[in-house]
Image 1 (cartoon, rainbow, N blue to C red):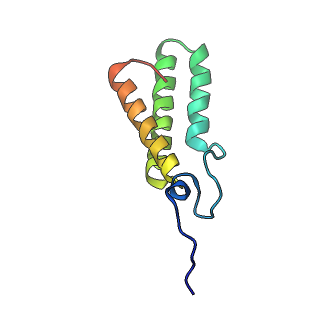
Image 2 (spheres, helix red, strand yellow):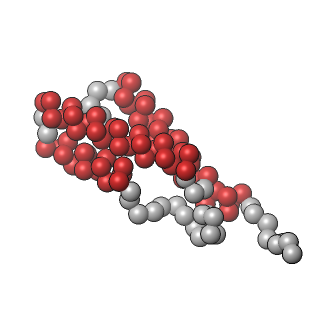
Length: 98
């Protein structure tokens, strides 16, 4: 038997393999690490601020990389690509930006 259900662009862009709408999900370790680094950076200065910034950028880069290559739909993969470009761009053009 073949299924008559057609997959639309909307389905590929915004639904997971089970057919549920998937725009956001529970935070994973890289996002939690990035958020903690942002909060710590508010109170940090000097060398510690630089270290926290590097950790935060690394965590956000890891999250974006994972989304780009393992995201459940086109929206999540596009979000990963945009954030990855942002992280690389800010690392090249600015200093200590999370």
